[in-house]
Image 1 (tube, rainbow, N blue to C red):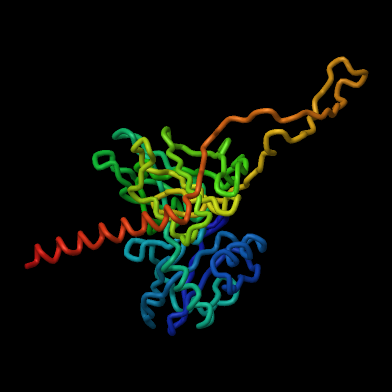
Image 2: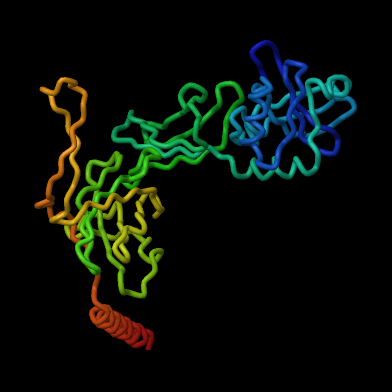
Amino acid sequence: VESNKKKQKKGDNTDGKTTETTSSITELPGYPENGIVGFLEEAKKNNTDQILIYRVESVSEIEGLRIRGALDRNGVTLHPGYAPNFLLPLASFLQLCGTEFKIFSAEENNRIYCDVRERRLRITYQSFSTTDFSPISVIPKGIDLFTEYKVVYDERSQRLKKVLHKEDGPVLYEGIKDRGEFGLWDGEPIHIYSMVHSEQTHRILHIHLNDIRADVAVDAVNITGSDKSIDEMRDLLNKKDTAGRLLSYRIVVKDGQVRAVFHHSGNAKRAKFIEEIVPSIGSLVALNHHHHHHPQPTASISSLATLLWVPAGMIVKSKTRKKIKEEDREGKHVQQQQQQQQQQQRM
């Protein structure tokens, strides 16, 4: 492994314990309970962020230690069959152990193996032509994909073929081609402006979100007075809005508040959101505005006004208990008919 100043290597002892190396004499960090995240933070703090973690593949008195990279310097799992491997003379390892190498304990090794299983590079991308490759999400976060890695993209199949760390070798990855399912592209919460119309009716006046799709379908349900839970509203797969578009978002209202927002990004997830309740019609509101002719142009002047009108927005009305029971009975009746038909077909 090459550092900023000289070559480095890592290995472990005959018991198979993982070892690491660095070009400085700075004490090498242990492998903390919070795993690779804490390890990388500690390494950076001690200016030893060029170290790598290696797995010992064989030990021989004549050949020495044969070691192969386990995790790259970002903590991404290296490909076990293609990661660079090195031979390290046994005498050199014993001489440098403690300065350029460190042997992890059995407990630390267990944590490392857990991270090796989990830390694949997960790349969600879009491709609209044979030459186009546009990543829209990279996990773990904070990785500069094109600066630190070489991405091999197969233009014929329009699929990821290989991902290599430029210094450390091929990594394990999962390429997810977005087909219009991935929407939210930042961590900002969705802003929802709404009005409580009545106990059974909620009005969604405005929704502000960052979504990369050209066409976004939003559904809203009000489960006030029903026996349905919020999580029962999670399933968006193959669900459509009234215009026949596949749903991107579902807003769940209960008891006069937005309780959850589910979004579809490969699978249904909860999105962070902030609900701003707009005052009801007839309310007095305070307005702050700047008066250009005021002696101090930046001065803010407040005034009171009456809210006379707001747009109807999306009206989200709950069903009465009577209506819910009727639909439940209808659904059970249809289900019984389907079961009878299936039994007849078997006969």
